[in-house]
Structures are given as structure tokens and as C-alpha cells.
Length: 407
Ligand SMILES: *Cc1c(COP(=O)(O)O)cnc(C)c1O
Image (cartoon, protein in one colour):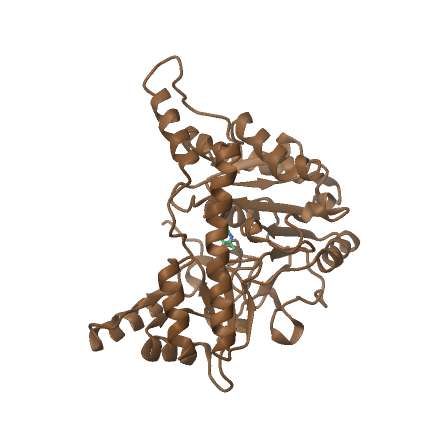
């Protein structure tokens, strides 16, 4: 008899996006001509940069000829891409990262979800709240979350509330934890930590033998100087942090699939008998066993985003979404809403009018303004009372949505 991993049945069905779809469908049935604008999307809308497409075509063509055909590649990624990443994202910015600290993957969702493989089930995990759902659900699958409670929170997870009262800066845990997920710029709130604020976390991690799991998927959207693009900009972070990055939101690779994870060689975990063990070695072992590398064609596309042309094209994509975010911020402010984020991220986090829940505010925006957002409560208890506006839509729709709100 095949027994299942019981943890899977504890996880509540993700009802957020299906519930949104249900409400939108119902609204459309009742109002067939309603001009609906979707600002709930977490996917990009602009096409891939030409440099990436050209590189894929060239790489695909190489596969016709035995002399340039590629079979299995290195599980960690080809040296050409690992070198481009280390050089462009780190070394040229004054951060020493070696290529064998870079692990190329099919995206940051896989890596942030799989990283739990190298950590014991007994680790106490802290997660900022609200958060990207992958951190919570994968820890639940791995047996580290305990039991779900009626409120949707898990008994063994430590939730670090981020809200208007603390200006979205999570307080250090008051109980002992071992792993902390941090995502900056943040999805869903669009907020960031300054260098000083992130330094507090690095020092705390160092003093308490905590590992920080730093998701920097939105790094490319940072516009302010005092916001670190990498956790390794903070002194000592290589002793305490793993960093996840993705080409998805940066270069439009959501469907093409490529990301990477940096695991510094000096980063250590502890064995049962208290010996230090290299996490870089463990992650390498994990990837070599369970992952067979990102497609060569896609790795060439990712490499091309670092060419002179590629960089220019990526910059244009980011500027387009950043301008949308600015338009959203301006529109919501004019309409009298209290908002956060949207300066260094493609998301604006809006506070529901006093007395309204996330879903009530969502329903108001849908029914009265024909605008679809994402209710904050879907990202965790601390998201209650907020909705997320995404800047990934078209310019036209973004402007139109804000005009509707200002009315
Ligand atoms: C979109 C996103 C990712 C990236 O996922 P990919 O698998 O690389 O497409 C990672 N973390 C967060 C918080 C995200 O929003």
C-alpha cells in the first residue's frame, strides 16, 4: 500500500486565484459589456528582448549539426552563463562571487521551493507576512510548518508581520528561529528594506546562526540608491545568506524559464553533532541528483540579456513597468488612497478604505470600477485590509484604470 506524504493533504487548496476568477466570471455574466481591466496579474505582458530571441534562434540552429549539438549540460549551468552572472550582477558591482557559487536553474520558484531539501525538518522557519505563497506551502510539504489553524496560519511557522504600522519593516523574531525568508523588493507589498535595515538582519543572522533565504526576483526594479540590489552588498552576508534571482520579471522569462541561486562557499549549516557543513556542497549535491540543467537554448538567451544590446532592451522593459507603477501610485494617491510600494517594484499595495476587508475592497473595485486586483489577505493574515495593484499591464489599461478611480 502506497502511503502518501500526509503533509500534502494538510495544505488548503489555493483558493486565491480560483476565487478571483470565480468573482470575475460572475461579474462578467451579470455585466457582459463591462470593460474589465486586469491589474491582478503577476506575469509580464511585454515580449522577450530581441537579444534573447536572437540568441535562442542561433542556439536552436546549432542543434542541427553534430559538431555544435548539445546534449546534457552541467547541472549547475554552463560556464558562459555562470561567468556572465558573476561578472555582471556581482563582481562589476564590487561583490566577489565565484562562478561555482552560482547555480543556474529553471527559475526562482523551483529554487525557493527546493532549497528546503538541504535543511532538516526540525528547523524553525520564519516568513515575512504577507508573502509569496511558495515559502509557506513548500515548508508545509516538507513537514516544517506544523498544522494549519482555522485562521490559515501554521502552528510551527513564525510569521513576521509587515504592515503600515511598522512601515513594512519586519521586526526580528522574538523566539528562536533557524531559517528566515526575506523577499526584497517584496511581492506582494512592493516595499523594500534599506541597507541599514537589511544590515540588522545580517547581524542578527550572524549572532544567532540563522540562514537568510533572500529572494531578489525584483532586484531590477530598484530605483533608489539606499536599497540594496543584493544581500551580499551587506558586510558579512556571505556567511549567512543564500540569494535567489530570476530572469522572469527582469527580462520577461516567465515562460522561457531561467533563474539562479547563489550559495557562497563559506556558508555553513550544522550537522546533528554540531559540525559545520558547506551548504554550497549540499546544494550542488541536491541539484546534481534532482535537476539536469536548464536548456542550453534558454541559457544562451539569458546570457544575451547581459550583452550591450540585451542590457539596453532589458532596461527598457523595466522602465516601462516602472512608469506604469508610477502612474498607479499617482492615480491612487489622487483618488485618496493610502498606498505603499511601487517605487522599487512593479506592485503597489493599497490600503482598503476604513472598515473594508481585502475582499470587500476587491469587490468594490471589480463591481464599481471594473478593475481586477489581488486581495491582500490571499498572501497571509497581515495582508488583510490591503489589495495589490500590478504594474505589469499595458500602458493604456493602466492609465484608463487610474482615470476610473480618480472619478
Ligand atoms: C515571480 C517571482 C519569482 C520568480 O519565479 P520564477 O520561477 O523565476 O518565474 C520568485 N519570487 C517571487 C517573490 C516572485 O514574485
